[in-house]
Image (tube, rainbow, N blue to C red; front, top):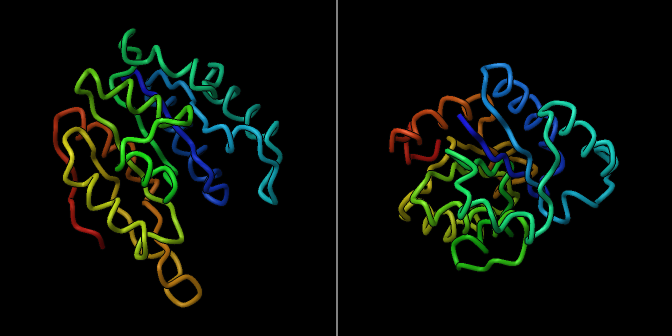
Length: 187
């Protein structure tokens, strides 16, 4: 499976994303990392941007797509069988649901979708049960979008927050390639 793996700014889930990517590579998949500009350049309490970049290149053996110009050829060149966006933040969900293409990740998705190939979304946002809910609903009902099961991550401290189950991404990707999904149900 030729996979484009997009990371947006939910930095607290990057370690889970890295483990997922390691699993994909170990299973024999070719993985090309794609990072939003903010994810690519921002140092956080979870690590420096350089450390995140180096980790992705080391895991995948591929350079990172991190600009709109680099992402645009994805569709015309049919670079990937599937595009995975995990973590996918509320900001990216809103842009995808409303056709806004102003980041490397949103361009990668737009370009990839021109070939009617699947995009797998792994929600990770503190606002999934708030303003982001409508955008999740829109994408759940849009052709070629598939979702990794997601649930509340801390209902007491973050009552609107949800995070996907990163351990199910590889299985969800295989199903998405068949036009199927584990469930559209949020649990």
